[in-house]
Image (tube, rainbow over all chains, first blue to last red; front, side):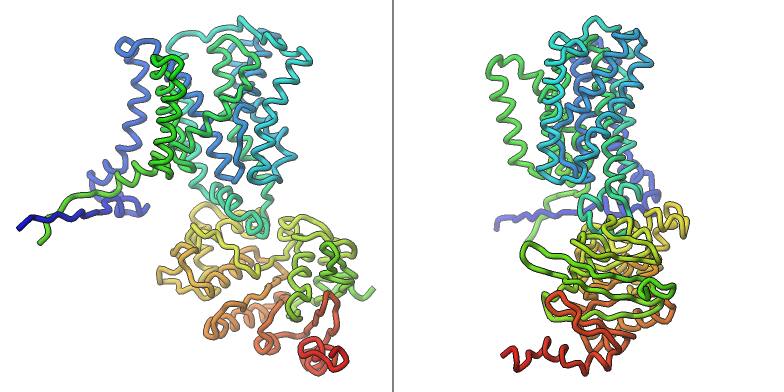
Length: 338
Length: 255
């Protein structure tokens, strides 16, 4: 008689995940909770130390990846309030241009221009989007898609801020360690700060606005104020990416408002898993290095890239992060029956 | 003007709203005294919910005024009106479905109004939320307050709506068909809550189709038909009014 097997599935996380005292019951359960958080942090922090092994090229890929990951985090935070954006480039560009022009015009050093670019860019974007915070869904998306394009043409036509040529030969970052570590640290701070924010009561209000803004309004809460705050906070992450990359490239120009910076963060978030913050970060760490690795294919690069993207999204519509999370929490094994 | 005297909590003066060609609310005036329980009834489509939306700012009136505690609140944003002390339930429940029931109340508890009245830090809010749910009949020691809203029966969701209003500690409560979709036993267990709130001196406006229950608690009743106020008086007066009978049952003259 043939032996039959059946799949048994155990949810091993249930005790540890119930946010109660059980989590501290044993070292094993603490480890279970800590591992998925600590391992990526350690890998990210030790990556710049492996410069000799992986080569400077891939170290620089990580810098760009972090910038895109920051943009996708900012996209995800806005999506958590129900503001679906197609214009993360607005944040990136605003941060870039403020940083670049402060350095170009006044010669301010990087440790002044980057903070100014971050806060200034976020403030600029929040004010710019203030009148359209009433819009929802696709209407808001269209406006955000248009704004970076509009600003590009405005800069081109008015020839301000370097016009077509942009501002070049800006002051460089102090050293390689700074270049490699600051984006990683910024990404980690942003990731954990956003997670904390969204799990707090404040985040509950933000998610409430996404799900049912009328009910939130009848709870005596000014939803526009909360939306504006969320855009500002998201703007900080996005503008920092722009501000940093400006000094990193020692150049700022119209490419800072390029469509890539709008579409790529969105793709990362969708691939990784919307609404988790860890998902979009994971998405960025898959898509950006993938895009670099496919350079060997020359012209066919985009074909392969798109094919992989489509396969992932069709295969795991919930997002890679959600899938891994489930597999981690659920323990599957085969059991003999009969 | 008697409608804005000291005793009236809310007065609505000649309010009008039309949607396209349809006149939903046609020059309705009403006033509610402090501590009064006012019932609003009327056949389907007579403008009851629109009237509630006009008072609470979800719809802007074409003309007319809404005066709350002596100040004009016409056309203010809904959150501003809620902040001033008018809260409402929705006829079609609007919970945050993927949140546990008690977490639904964190959102109103986070509002500036509640912070001012109650204070409260993280963690404390959870306790207040559970207390509020108990107040509207959620079994405290069961798992019901912790269940995800989407898994709760309709009657509980209706009472969750009520709890959200109570969370704001409003002075005027507008219940828009709270009993619709509730079972007889759910209505029976919710009635004492309304009666208690009324006894505590809260001003309440109840829009209701369940006339028997409403007539038991209402101090005064207003009847709407085709957007117009056709009767305003005690339960007895309203029940005997010819116009009301005609609106509900049809009159011979109308054929």
